[in-house]
Structure formats: C-alpha cells, structure tokens
Image 1 (cartoon, rainbow, N blue to C red):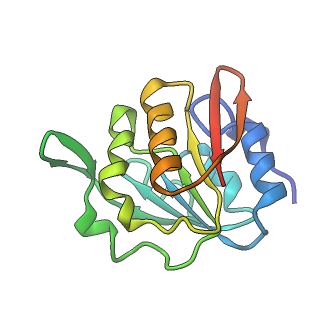
Image 2 (cartoon, rainbow, N blue to C red; image 1 turned 30 degrees about the horizontal axis):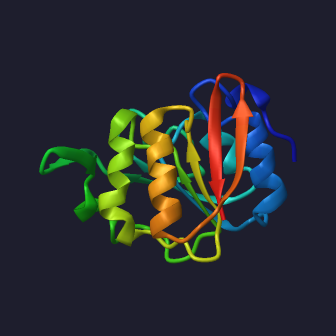
Length: 164
C-alpha cells in the first residue's frame, strides 16, 4: 500500500518521520496520537490509530481513526486535554506514542499527566521539537521515563524527536 506524500509535512508529521514509523513500528499495531491531522490519514493505512483531539472540527475527519474528543480544560494555570473524558477511552496496548498535540504551548503540560500513558518498551515521538517548549518536553520525558534520545529527524522547517 502506498501513502500520499501530500498529507505529510507542513503542520502534519513529516515524511521522514512517517517513513521511520513505517520501518520501525510493526504494521497493524496500535498507535496512540495526541493531536490529529492530515498525517492521521496516512497512519490509518498501516495501523490502528487512536487520536486524542481537542478541536471538534478535526474529530471524524479520518473515518478509520478512533477519535477521542477531549477539549482543553484548565488545570490550575495550565490547559490540557480533559482527563475525565480521555482516560477511560485510551487503548490499553499501543506500539507508539506520538505527541503532536495539544496545539501550541499546551503540549508541554503532558508532563503533569504523564501517568496516563504507557511508555515502557515502545518508541515515543514528540513532534515540532524545533520549538523550545517541545524540546523541553523531550528532555523532561527522557529524564522521568528513563529514555534516550534515539534520533532527531528534520523534515523541512521542523524537527521530530524519537525517544527509546
């Protein structure tokens, strides 16, 4: 099965990252992605995808994805996905955690909710690590989850980091 390169790059996951996923995550396994978009349409061709999405306009755009609509709510001074909506709908087993949401600086607030996610024995990808707050998240997750930065992939103007 081929993929559509037009659905990659830009704000979506980059083509080089997508190819890394294809070469390193067993086909037909489950991917949990935080934030969905055009790249979701390519991932579902090879994987079972669960997409946590804050923006109702994106929910259901890719019919083959399993969407979890979790709007952003306030946790003190920070905003992050509504944990009450999300926590019982996450898949129990997944072979990749792809962090590409929520939008903007809110992504770094995953650190306060990291207990919700399984990370042992699977790759964790943080997208947009050319931005300082996403790079900060990579460093925090590497430390708290005892993972190493395996690879930084540059796709045009942006970067993704893979933790193993």
